[in-house]
Amino acid sequence: MRCLIVGAGGTGKSIARGLIKIKKISKIYIMNRTLESSKKAIKEINSSKTEIYVEGKSLPIDYVILTLCAVSFEERKKNARRSKNTYEIRQKELKINLLAVKDKLPFFRKLPKKVKILVVTNPVDAIENYLKKKLPGRKIFGFGLQLDINRYSKFLKKKIFGVGIHGKIVPSINLKKNKDYNVLYKKVDKSFLDLVRKKGLSYPIYAEEFRKYFQKLISDKKELIYTSANFKKSFCGIRDVSIGLPFYIQKGKILGIKEIKLNLVEQERLKKDAQVLKDSIKKYI
Image (cartoon, rainbow, N blue to C red):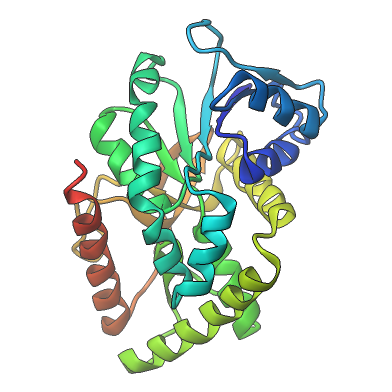
């Protein structure tokens, strides 16, 4: 199996370090903005599995992993200081990151339809939905919801299920009032935002979580993963938008959605977030 990482900055290099541990992966191609930055990334990753990908050269690829970030490190730090929550940080990156992704559309269109795209670029769900519209018929997944599940599970000290947008998860925990979810969201998000402001993004965690996610995605047996993806049936009345859900998957193919019960408050929160997601990318489609 061969993967192409598009945009090997801090996140991309971290993901590459996780992927090289997977035996099924024989080659990881790196495509950065310049040849020199690609060479530098490969040197830092330091693995015989990595190789520079040069556009125009025909190479067999199974998965493209999109980790482009057009926002500078300094700007991300400023956004973290100025934003009320992590969702707001991601939304501030939407326009500029979409421009970087748009620049790669001609390249993506030339790839064989069997090549799957995994979106890590933030805001994940908006980028994933944008690519779904621009690249019809292609399998596209968004990574990130598992990170939210982990944060809520750690905060609540129990394993939970959840759905929705990366950074704005709707946990399935059956609270009675909408304000209770708002309070919980603020507490969980603040603990993470404080950490980001203090130490920045934890790239080693990204590496390990993406490795586990990808191993399940390509597994020969049926697995359960959290991912943003398009689904044929409506979910809680939601259609025509990809949102993060717990999916059963095998060999990169979605088999179905895990049955998960949301109470009325949770359903309304999810519907509202799905509409906000639609509206956020409408002007870019």
